[in-house]
Every structure is written in C-alpha cells, then in structure tokens.
Image 1 (cartoon, rainbow, N blue to C red):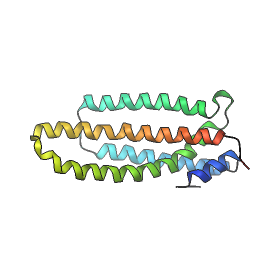
Image 2: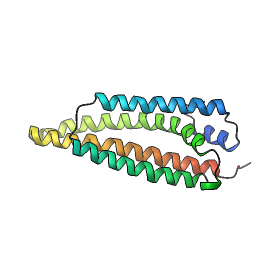
Image 3: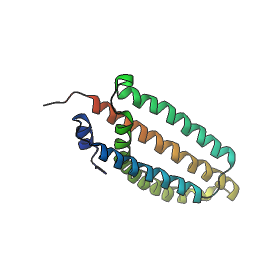
Image 4: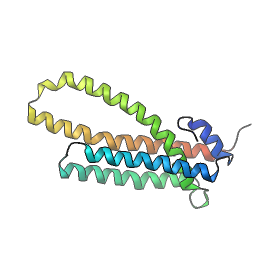
Length: 160
C-alpha cells in the first residue's frame, strides 16, 4: 500500500500488481479519511444554512462531473476496475493534497490576519464564512483533477 508514492501506484495499477486485499485496504483507509472529514465538519463552527447548502450543491456538482470524467479516463464502459483504481489513487492523492492545502491555508490565514483589521466585526465574520466555505470545494476539485490525471496515466501504454 502506498501512502505517498502515486507514480509507483500508477505503475502497479498498470501492471495489475495491486491485489484484492490491497484494494480493500485502500478502501478502508480512504473511508477513514472521509469519516474524519465528516467529524471535522460536525465539530466546526456553524455556518449559515444557505452557505452550507451552496457548498453542498457545488460539491455535488463536482462529485458527479469529476466521477464521470474519471470513469471515462479509465476507459468508460470498457475500463477495468474503476472503483478499485479510484479508491487506490484517492488515498495517496488526498494525503499529498492535504499537506499542501494545510500549508497554504496556514499561510493565507497568516496573511489574512494582517489585512483583516480594515473591516468591522460583522463584515469580517461574513468574509471569513465565505473564505472558509470555498476551501472545501477547491480542495475537492484539486483532488478530483489529480485522480483524473493519474487515471489517464494508468491507461497509458507501458514504456520500456
């Protein structure tokens, strides 16, 4: 199981070296990450219902459109092991993206704290809500895009 090395995982998927037990482990690990994200959403500060609904609709659109694109990148109806490949790629891609995003969010928050003094408290609260609501869809889009690119690479012919 790879937690970081997406290139080697792509190679192993191309050459059918990932065993069913490993796919199961990728599914379990990926599901744990998804459950953790649900937990963090549950304990995060409340957002307005309209903003949560808008974020949900955007994420739903991303889920449907990117899953269809990734399915086609896997070969569509003639593709092989779509869900196995998807979940196997999901784990290391999410972990790598999460590290990059955490660093980016920390830097944005540090920069933002220097410029946020220009707004009053009500304006600042509204801006922070919208800023926080955009992080999840952007993160999701980056993850889907990277899975899409990886799936295309899985289908490329082997080079000697």
